[in-house]
Length: 247
Picture 1 (cartoon, rainbow, N blue to C red):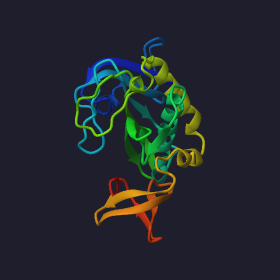
Picture 2: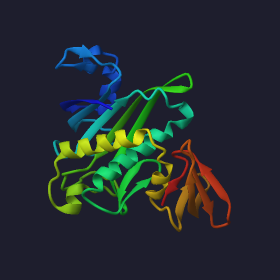
Picture 3: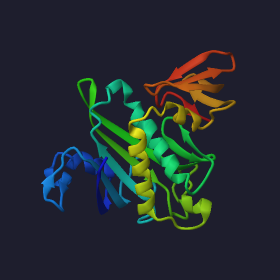
């Protein structure tokens, strides 16, 4: 795939910026050849977000010019709506592979948070537009903590790459590593890789749902993204996103 990459100093949210501008021809214009390439993948990178979003109403804290804040616009029209979780798996694996050039002990907390040990280093927010049974457009928002040294919000467990290795990392090189890995895995069946990287993939751990807390082990993540657990009474429990919490 070929990526058009646009850098901006500031926006409220890179996902929101892409949703607002994606229909404008100027967004996808190749300034070198002055031709339109409407099917190219597009990457918007911001140095700062005034209203960076996590899932739900969560806010993403990121110091100006220190982290990777970007959104990807792709057009995976060959992917059916019931397979859209494939994109979540691919971007999670791509970020783990790129970060893995610098640190170990990375995992994917279902569905797509990237963890270093028990701390969150990256959040991902994916928004799909469907056309019939297929995906027309997909916007993938990524907040990756790179060179930030301190966090001041009440988020429970943020960590940055700098806090782990105690040196700055070239954000542009890291971005290109992620895009290259994303391209590589988009056409592959990545289920086995995804399951292998899952946070808490072994042993019993505490979870909570609408009925209270319980102990369970991870069985699998289904192709449509549902999490399948087996509790300590040997009963299987199946959850969609936001229906269960990791304790």
